[in-house]
Amino acid sequence: MKILALSIVAALIAVPATAQTNRIDRIRPDAPELAAYGPHAIGVRTLHLVHKDQIDVVNVTAEAIPHYDRPITVEVWYPTAEDGAPTPYEGVLLRDGETAVTLHGRAQRDAAPATGTAWPVVIISHGYPGNRFLLSHLAENLASKGYVVASIDHPDSVYQHKVAFGSTLLNRPLDTRFVLDELARLGGDPSSFLNGIVDASRAVLIGYSMGAYGAVISAGGGVTQTAVDLSWGTPRGLLAAHLAGSESHEALMDPRFRAFISIAPWGRQYGLWDAAGLAGIDRPILYVGGSVDDIADYQNGIRVIYAETVNAPAWLLTFENANHNAAAPIPAPEESWKPVESLDFVPFEHYADAVWDTNRMNNILQHFATAFIDWQLKGDEGRAAYLDLIENANDGVFALNEDGTPKPEHNYWKGFAPRTAKGLRLEYNGVK
Image (cartoon, rainbow, N blue to C red; front, side):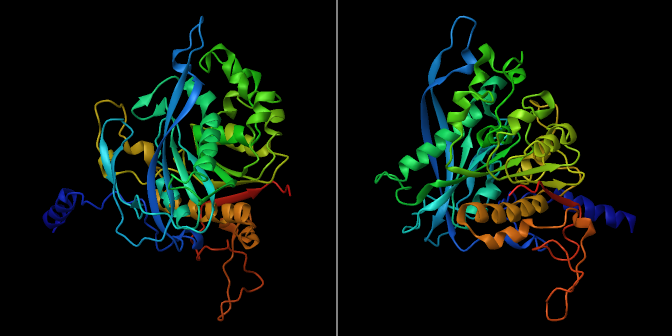
């Protein structure tokens, strides 16, 4: 019997990965209500943009601050009326910056956009390092619900070109603002596929890790002098462009960004912000984090940022016992499970969490992002109820009558089936 069991295990291990292994679009049977894909088929295209005359942080010296035309690649998802077969995402690089993999979702490459509606905008900013496909599960999901979603490859901060951390510190909010400007421009360009389908006046910025750092700055959280002076930060004091209270930071705060989602924001634990700077945040913001995050530092970083957001509505969604990879990254591609010579860790660790299933976390993020963004950008007041919850989901009581109406004691998280909200906490700062 033992030999038979071992043979079965060996056979299962030997089964090769199929062409459909690396899926980014799975909705689990126990996913919360709003994780489901929306009514629209999805198109996807790649934009190659150039942000002219930007500071070349990588080549700054004591004598010179050179400028260059900064190339920025953006993946754009949008609603389409076409009913074609999904196109695989081929040649997507893994964390090692060398291994190319194929991802599978629901979008159709180069499909014609659905016309007649100008859709609100979602901009996605990855971590350091990352790429524009790291949160592609969320990009596809939101596009199916009536959004134009643009996910950025940030130069100097992608897997194949991870250099000069100071470039990331300076450029994250500049890149996202530039992409919003470009989407607005292309939305009025008859030669662009985006013509007539973009409403850039209604936008939300979603950032993860260093993208979340950028989101906090764009939301109004100007950095400290400590951040400007970091020996390992941006050279020549150039980060002063985002200094709290400066004219340059005030000018960066774009009113078209009506709300923000900041997942595992990095920096508070190193003094990149203080209470005075974070008090500058003036628009609704949803923070997301894992309670044992040791990169962004949940206790001394993420929670402090949330606590010091005092002049705007703020929520903090916590995945208990999750680390830095909470909710944002796609499920670890099959190829990432193998060690590579260029890294001292298995690439799998860049995507996965030791406690939570990534697909499960993705679905929960899709649910809350949908509720928050529909509320903030489309004015759907009914979505507010999905964020009006008892703080600790473990304390929830699921009690319905036979006809489905709630009993007096029912207070379970809206949109979650019985037992499926365990391990989650949602706090709200009470600011209206």
